[in-house]
Length: 197
Image (cartoon, rainbow, N blue to C red; front, side):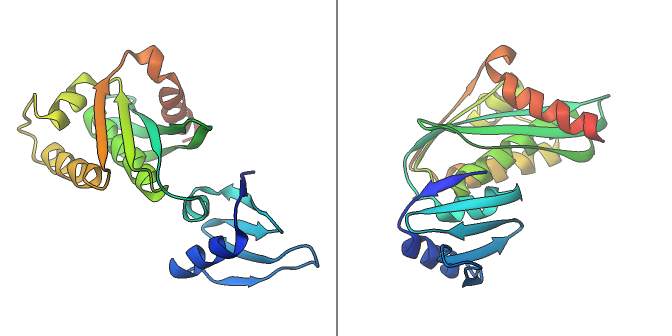
């Protein structure tokens, strides 16, 4: 359950600007409450508490933008192609900011890796980070995005364009290949999502 210490009136304005309906609180202690996706934000005097199973969307709107983060991504596939899933983690100096994993249907391993990278970049963009350092254990995807490898696959080429469009939102970014053990949380999330199917 994320707790965000902030100016709750400024947070209310950010939600309203994003088109989220903000309602009066249910008790004398609640300043206001707002719901988005699968979560509800409840404001008190100097903090907002987010309840619910999917707090990411509303949390991204409430947090102050800027700063630097690291993103880790991994795709998992049982068979190639086969049932596939993504896993990603966003980490800042304060620890894990957000993480996720979901099944994406049938895909190749490379398609799953790209989908995981896209999900991580979209989350980091939603949180408003200025600087992003991305790490993944797929050398192929990292080198394709950095322009060191080309791809003849039209679908992967299209996903690479999407990745570059998302990276353009950051003032500064890096993308590097890391060993699987450095990427274990994203790997775990992707495999957990597959196991839940």
